[in-house]
Length: 114
Image 1 (tube, rainbow, N blue to C red):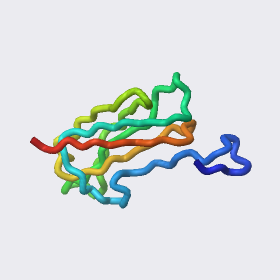
Image 2 (image 1 turned 30 degrees about the horizontal axis):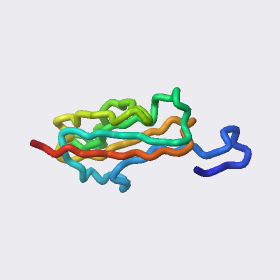
Image 3 (image 1 turned 135 degrees about the horizontal axis):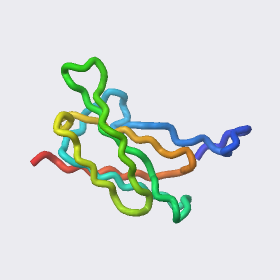
């Protein structure tokens, strides 16, 4: 967690990030992922840990194709996400964390193609 003088939150929110971390690295493959979010510093009534989405390239598009943004719970078990068929051979996972969460651990589990 970073603090920021003059910021009404008192800390710097976690910025959006991707896995793998290199921009444009679409080296993951599989037909499903599970995203599990953990934090000891959140209220027990909070449900949302992050939003996850699948990014991939399509030969006919000049920019990456992005799937819908799906909510992932915090401290409540993993969210199973089916990878769209058009992205199964080459994708990246994008994450956005709500501004009120100060620290977060995200575990990602990949399921390979059958």
